Length: 142
Image (cartoon, rainbow, N blue to C red; front, side, top):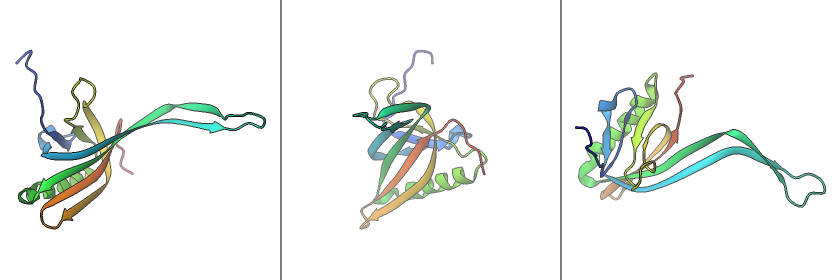
């Protein structure tokens, strides 16, 4: 299938160590990407403005909200179970691919860890599952 391009119309998430475990997120209603760079600033006596010092590290995270309609409650449970399995696994990384980008590099595949999840039912109409995925290099259990 050389030269064939696959366009995903839905976000996907699954265990890094088991690519076949990927789940589709049917309605990704919100996503905020945060990029942070190591650094600080110091205000020296007599200077009008502070002096900036930068470090070598940076981080990136995705604050996301997945919406599941009333008939998709089994998918809510599957997503929550995936987060539980990942947290207990020796390699807790998840593979995440969003679907918002229209150009290469904007929504590539990322290795992430999820440390907090907030499932919120909305009067029996739908569930919003909010979570933040931190992009990671590797995973170490402590």
